[in-house]
Length: 131
Length: 312
Image (tube, rainbow over the protein chains, first blue to last red):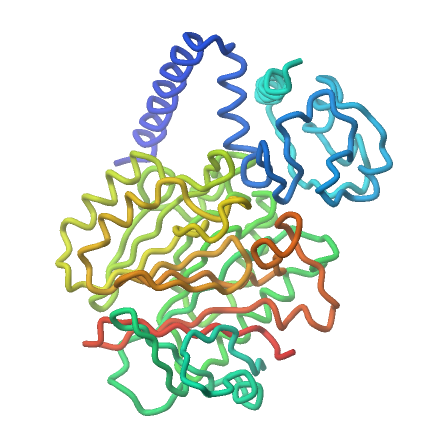
């Protein structure tokens, strides 16, 4: 199979899966942003973050509205511990765009390149936190 | 070179650690042979059955990582290559079980390629880790290392009677790895063509057994894959991700995780969370390293030797 066909096949599978997930989620009362955000979270964040367990990064179920560096079970960098910010949509967006620009010398090396993915994952985290 | 073999699963009363610490790594390690679920050992290079072939597993190179746990991951990867090149029996090929890069950057892959060019082995098989896919869904990884692969990068090949299967399980679902229905369907078809007497080696980044699900060290749908592998007489599963050696034997399946070439992680449950573990600089090379695997023709079993870059 040529790469073009494979790319198209992947796109079709992803689009179909997203459509099914959206329909299921909407019928369960979840927003479309939440559904897309969950997908982004699993692809971009899930390697290092869990919702209810600390991994390489702290647990994130209630990160929206939380004070930075405040999960007592997680060992943060001094930079994050001393930042004293409360995570809202604007700050999470800045953090995901360029963590070092928001809090220099932190331990998170990843970033999320696409603005729409950041928006979706923020919607997901906001809804998870009940905000 | 290194002096110590990390794992000891053979309850034979030998003070293996002390014994092994006295040996140089090249040519004098211990080969673990697991056959029908029973482990036995013999000196590396000692007369044994006719040699089939060997290959080396390396993992979790994290090129681009620069934190205190290892500020120079390129030099430890280089030391790994030097170690492989110094082996008395040169492996036929190398398998890299993922997290080649730390951030999926082109420059990181370039550096990786440059270092691995120095290996005597020109045949290198890769599967991605989550660090190779989290930024761009593995686009760059597939462009560079995924030629001829299926789906998100899975594939199989045969080498001297052994069937090798590279799987991709890095999409995290609630923290655990996942293969996905499309890949499982492919795996079932791929294995159907093989007789149950064919030795099978499966390699993937995240462990295909539940090492420690609380830290995401397992694969949500691996049980399905293992049902397809059940009928085979010899199955060896090689993984990375957890940056330490662990082994488990279940029926005819031997699960094995490898050290990283970059930095260690804590033992399951021994720290509040997983992640890069800083050890004193002089100890680093004793907790990272390579895995050497030998297939002995007619034995239907593979011998696995883990060796750090340096002794403690």
